Amino acid sequence: MYAFSKAVNSMHSEDVKQLMKQASGKNLISFAGGMPNNDLFPVKQIDEIYNSLPEDVKKLCFQYGPTSGYPPLIRSLESYLKNKGLAVDDNKILITTGSLQAISIITQEFVNEGDIILTENPCFVGALTVFETFGAEIHSIPIDVNGINIEALKSKIESLDRKPKFLYVTPNYHNPAGIIYTPEKKRELLEVLSGTGIILVEDDAYSDLYFNGEEKSLTRAMKSYGVKDVEIIYTGSFSKILGPGFRLGYMLSSEEIFEKAETVKQALDACTSSFMQILANEFLAQNKLEPYLTFLRSEYLERKNMLQKYLKTYMPEEVTWNEPKGGFYVWLKLPPHIRSTDIFKESVAKGVVFVTGRTFDPASQKDDRLRLSFSNMPKDQIEKGVIILSKAIKKVLQNSKMQIS
Ligand SMILES: Cc1ncc(COP(=O)(O)O)c(C=O)c1O
Image (cartoon, rainbow, N blue to C red; front, side):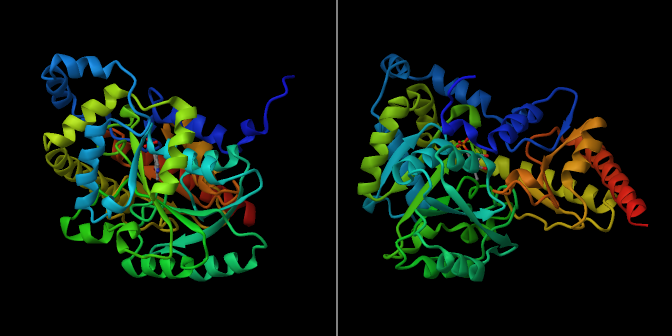
């Protein structure tokens, strides 16, 4: 027996390991993977970019770089974020090794063991593993189709004897719930936090992936609202718009928070891969991102529509869901007495995987939902996958009826 640190005790880390395995499992129809399908990656564009780099920049790819990030990429990101209405000039960008690293840096910057972090319920499981690893006490607030439950948030804040260090939210095309906060909800949330000293961590990994251009304005970040008395740290990622293998993310924060974050990052990995930063910078600087996003949006819309059609055709009427308007996920709701873990056992035996609801509950309890991702699987497997899954659900429903009678 080794004397392991408390950090290895994250309840959710097994879930994540399992998830990564299932997402790429051979011979499985996988609704589990929250990532793009390999066939969607801009392989040709990146080939061209690398091959046409000047020799001295190619050499830089192999070198360490500044901890805060490759300066040309920071400049490209500044204009990308300005386009989203973010006040880049009053803030600083730190490039991170995936946005999960930004979440980890923010946690290390503010959280001592036993400190409180507020999250949504359900919550992105990667963030939960980070919060647990650093010994945070997690308190979660339910979300519905319009966003976080404001009354529940208020009473949670009032009921706590210590001030939470931050509230972590994913307002745009939530993972796993698939929802987008309404603009009213975003405003109400800022009002509740106003003057409390609770930092808002706004995770915006999916905002470019709206299906309908007219709804782009709904993705507006709370950090762009110009609210003065709420400190907001904004995080973003290249994983869903370029490829998770780039391991590129970033955080945008006030200078004071940036400086301490840079110190934490220095101790973690000194700098993010220069190779990936240079390639990503060229992608942005050569204006290749927008056309690629146009392609991705239509691809994901088509996949979402297919999944929606087959769910309507094959799912038993007890199962409900909201149709997403962007992002990667459909969050199915089961009758309260049915556990998605039981459905998982049935469906994995028949070759279909998804992610169980309890994976996203900070307490690992609530299990009446399941997450289907339409971004990753080949399109021609969607119908077959839904048929197998719906049969598994019907079987579990049937068994539960037999037990009741
Ligand atoms: C809401 C959310 N935030 C952050 C991430 C992490 O992304 P990255 O690959 O940039 O670490 C993900 C990935 O699934 C996510 O869904």
